[in-house]
Length: 456
Image (cartoon, rainbow, N blue to C red; front, side, top):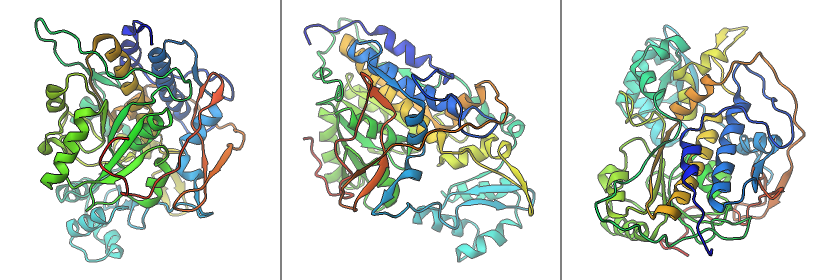
């Protein structure tokens, strides 16, 4: 690039972003049934990423979105087929369970979470879980399970959630919380060692992204960064492998390695990666990586030009800030499950959003924040930190204007196929277009944990 445009507005655009309904370039505005404007959340989050990309490359309108592709992308796992087979859903022990006074949502898809659940309830088999819960209140069961490092959330009404200290924390501040490292007196800006590519499909070519995320939200963000050309290296702990189907869905255009951060040699390899990384994305519970020296403040102290984006379920404040969580549990806690409940032959039961919108919207927010901070780094030579949480994204959804029960229809998604080490994949593409042409993945998922701990 001959010159770097002044991109100071890019941070303000994203930092002040509220996931407001946006008018897509084409396609319907509403299509999912339900009382909340999930479409507005989805379109607003993807628009945030497109807005940041336009600011980064200095070409207004180059990146845009369509409603059909956005709807498909927010249900990417539902559309995925692996060698003709549909991905597995929630484990049998996961889901809503009755308690003595209501309902609780459990998440036991991972073996270690399932073991902690049965231990917390003093039962030996998953079949005994339901019986044990019937003898406990929802909140008492939630507290017992989370105290044993398990994952659960009582189903609360919206009013009950609003009355908690966690709501006060989760609803405060902007959707994307951005902070910048302080500038010392007399300090000269560092020259950014990376600049965007002029190729519209791969503006992030040459960018090095260290991906320390799991499940859906974080991996969805880094999947987008990889599709935009970045060298994305995902690292997982060998003792806690990722679920295969979830990994495949988010594994396009990135590499996959394992590293036990408790091992000094592995930790040193990760530190060397960070020394030359441009972006670090983390997706563990708040403070979970701090013992390894990976807190954002520590990373920025060593590398003021580093861009760090972090994700947690409940945020960095409030009494649940260090608690484990997932999209489904945030829905249960904050009132969404109660709002989407229904009456069946067995009585009233809680419900869920039509897609895991909190995960996907937060993922696109993470990508938007990373790109906005990169744009600012081109101008100032300094990076920064962006923090998002699933609970904060849920509050954005509730802040959108209420809609009557609705539901239109979308055309069937355009399905793509690609060979992979796991067999032939059928999948949906990205929701963002470059100059009116849909972005495409360049490479399928690699074998889990087979990549080396170095940059390309």
